[in-house]
Length: 281
Length: 255
Image (cartoon, rainbow over all chains, first blue to last red; front, side, top):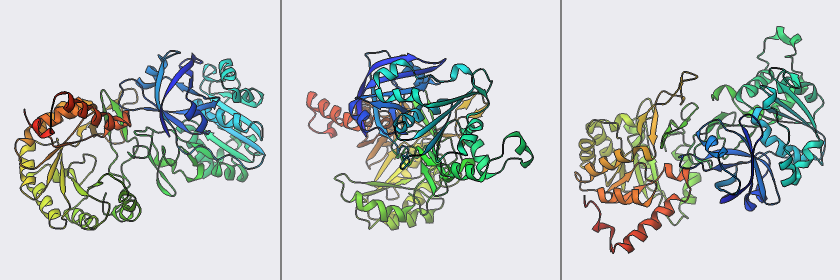
C-alpha cells in the first residue's frame, strides 16, 4: 500500500454522471490487481472515497466512478494536470481462475468498473463473457477510446463477448444482468459478480432457493449447476468505509466465518460465504 | 477490547457530515483473550507504547478485562471507556453519573498497576463533576472527550443514515466543544488530561495544550490523511523551535 500523489492525465464524462479518470501513479499501477481499490482524498472532506481500480498498466491507473455524493462530485471537477492524493492498492482482489475455461462476469451498474480490469487480464487465457446490466441505455458502458489508447491492456476488452441488458429495455435485452447471465452460467467454469446490493440479494435468493417455486416457469429457476457456481463465485462488495485499511470496523459484515472487514478481508468474498440478510445499504 | 468478542452494530456504521464523521461501530472487537494471545506479542516488538481501551456491560466485565491485560507484555496502559455512545447498555451509562464513574474507576484500580486513563463522555450535564470524581478514585489520567451523540437522516429514503438512530460524532466539527471541555477539566483536576476531539493539524494540538492538555489523541484525521499525526508532531516541533519554547510545560494550560 502506498500513499502517493497521482497526476491526472485524462478525465472525461462517459455517461450521465459517470466519469473515467486516468492518472499516473507508477507504484500503485505496478501493484494493483483486479478487484482492489484505492482511497481518494476529496478536498477537505473527512473521509477518503474507496474507488475500485478499473484498469492498470504502463504506470497509470484508471478509475471509473459515478458522481453521486459530495466526494465523487468534488472528484468530477478535477481537471487534467491536477494531482490527487490516494492510498492503495487496498483489499484482496479477485483470485484468478486456474488454467483456462469459460468465465462469466456479471456486472450490475458500476460493478462493471472492477470486472473490466479482471476481464482484460483474463482475455488472453480464458473465454470471457461479460454481462452488464444497467437501469437504462445511458448507463451502459462502452469502453472509451482514451482508455484503450492510454492503458493498453484494455484493448482486449473490445474483443470480448459483451451481453448488455437494461431494466427498461432501452438498449440490449430487457432484464437484469443476472437474468441474462443464467444461461451462460450453465456452461461456465467460473463466475464473478459485482453490482448493487439488490443484484446480490437476487442472486442469493436463487442460491438459497427462497424464491417462489411457482415462478419457475417465469425464468427464476436456478439449476443445481448454477447454484453451485454462484455459491463458489467471487463477489466484490461495496459498503460505506471509514479507514480503508481494517482499523475502524465501519465496513464489517457478517459471513459464515464470522465478521469480516470489506476493506481489508475483502472487498472480494466467496459469494456463498456472505450472510446477505445481515447487510443493509 | 471486551471480555468476550463483540459483534458490533448493524450496517451502515459510518456517515460523513459537515466537517465530521458519525459512527455506530458498537465496539466490535475480537475479545481480550484473543487480543492478548494474537496481538500483544506484536505490540511488544513496537517502539511505541500500546494503550488498550477496555469496555464492558457490567463492572465485573471491566474488572476481568483489566485483570487479564495487567500482566501482559506489550500493553503499556489501560484506557477505560465509560463513554461509548453506541451501546444499549454499559459504557456510556457508567460515564454519565459521577457516582457510577467513580465506582467503576475504583474497581478497575484495585486490579491493575498499569497507568489508568479514563475516557470521559461529553454527553453529560457537568463533565467537571465526573472528572473530579474519577480523578479522586484512582485514575492516573483523563481523556477528554469521546464522541458527541448525533443523528443524520436521509430525506429521500426517509431513513436514518446509520443502522441506528444515533451515532458518535467526531472530526473537526466537535473541536470547539472538546477544547472547551478540556479547558474546564484541566483546570479542575490535578492529573494529566489527554485532549481529544477534532484535532487535525498542529495548531489544533497546540490549542489543546494551551487549554491544559498534557497529550492529545488523533483519530478521525488519520482517515483523512494517514500521515496527519506525523505532520502534527513535526508542526509542534517547528513551533517550539521558532517560538523558543524549551518545554511544552511552558505553554501548557496558560489560558
